[in-house]
Amino acid sequence: MNVPADNNLLVLVSSVNPRLQYAFQLILHDTAGIDFQLTTDKNQFANHTGPKFSYTDHPQNAELHFTPHRLLFEKGIHEQHVNVFEWDGTFAMFGTHHHSAWPFDPFAAAFYLASRYEEYMPHLRDAHDRFEAESSLAFQKNFLTKPLINIWAEKLKWLLKTQFSQLSFHERKYRFISTLDIDNAWAFRQKGIMRTAGAYARAITKLDIAEVIFRTKTLAGIKKDPFDTYDFQIEMQRQYGFRSIYFILLGEYGENDKNVSPSNRKFRSLVKLLADYADVGIHPSYASNRQPSRLKSEIATLSKILKREVTRSRQHFLILKLPGTYRNLIACDITDDYTMGYAHHVGFRASICTPYFFYDLDQEQITPLRIHPFAVMDATLKYYMKIEPHQAMDYINPLIAEVKAVHGDFVSLWHNESLSDYRMWEGWKQVYVQMINEAMK
Image (tube, rainbow, N blue to C red; front, top):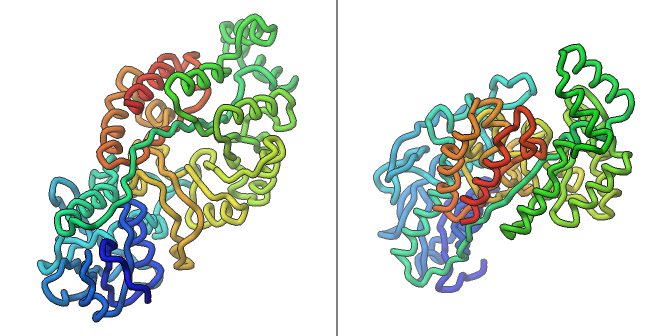
């Protein structure tokens, strides 16, 4: 076993397994920015003159000590009775006894939350086969808007700094990441004769003369298509100096997949244009959840349009079923996924606001898929929470503040149509501008 440098952290553990390795990598390295080494050698630990702490049932001497919870040493998935309690101005869980530096095990707690352990347990799913926020511990115990894992990592970093002045850290910097889903590239254009005729018929049946007139003027080239907000999006990137990530829906037309056909020349040109100014990933179709072969086909189509490898994804309708969804993405060489969030509520589904790797609980292994949690979606505020545009920043600002406080990534999810100021989306374009103003401060 290699001997760590005097300024690196050594952690004594009773045994090493994938869960424990994952939890310590998540908290210490990926979140707190600390290089560390695990050891089961008590002599090595005793002789180490640099920063160290023990993660064992009992301390070896008078060193900094954390008492472990059994979760990281279990195999399989079992019902966990999680007691959430207040601690040091925040929340804690997986309590331990008084010998420990903290009254809980942050590594077990972080593992439980990041692995989405509770989503493997029996639970009700919504009409779109999604795990609902209301079923989560975070919602039930009122910490959904708190990135607890990052908060614990910051507190641990402060504790270690006070104990070991020589300990070095990789300092994280706060980032704003704007992501946009293109579910419906245009409201009226490029829909084909049959879809356009059907839309006219529905509008006439509803006596929606305003839409008939607007659609006609758009198709005649007199009006700009309301969902064509791409110039505005690109201008916002230029003005504020950030680079967005787009997720493009390329699925075959269906009840919940209604974008323009990927064979459409104008649509393909749009995708190429967006890729000149931003990063582009796949938006796996609703239908691909029941037919995984479609996922591979859609990724191949986007790769052919872009003439480059596609490695980013976000599920259409945010349909995420563990571990199957992520296994399918890994099988298609997706390296980064941006689905981790709720449709019905804003906040942090995995209680973290920095990228982290997916742990497959069924197979008990760390995977190469990096998860990027998002904090807020336009449709969540409007459709599910019934928030008016003038109220939106009351919900967005606290999330941004939470992320900035722990030097995390504030990831937003918007759609091209919500920037249109057209009909139901009137006023939401300004919300996007206000959000960027606050996020880029």
